[in-house]
Image (cartoon, rainbow, N blue to C red; front, side, top):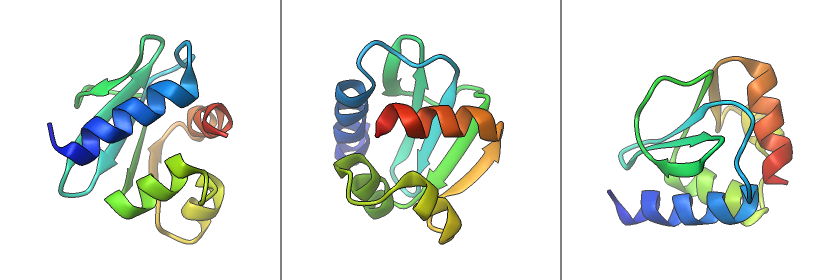
Length: 95
């Protein structure tokens, strides 16, 4: 697991606190993937209701609260594939 993935897992678990009602996957380009579900966040590349893909800098900005996930999506920095409702729920859980 890359340092970027390890840091993102830690940050996601701190923000979500208690899990997330759904399954989502973050793919960090050139780094790896993170699964988020009812058990919290962990490194992994399983099937998910929604997959969100971005570069490490974009994910770090979202997790730090410097970049709104919706703005990242609208500006093309964050790609979303799958259930948009699940993506929106996760965005709310992260804010």
